[in-house]
Length: 170
Image (tube, rainbow, N blue to C red; front, side):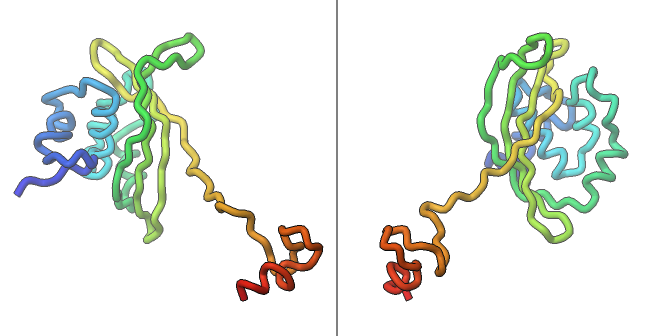
């Protein structure tokens, strides 16, 4: 039975990210590269992460460093958000392809989430990962205001909530 690709595409690993990680086919676009990089994290194929990082940005990345950082991480899933091509960014107005994603993982038994707006650039007719900016998870918003028992009743009666509209819910 063929192994499912960890990137969440629904395809087999051999038909999806494996050819990119093996170096036999370079990804054509930023989303495909992003998916293959996530799969490389899941499968421990850290050399692909180094190779697919833009050559001008490899100073701080190594297989040893990535191995150490990911040793207690169990990857769960990848959700791809907005994908944009040719976004102006940077000091010189360079154009980058952008992929927003959320990756879910477990570390020390605690579920966690990593969100990033990733920037990709072309170099010698290949697309590479350049850098990313963290995305903050959206805060939960209650549909209605939370009223405490001793707060003034929101109906405007002047009574405490527990003696007015809250008495009906008790």
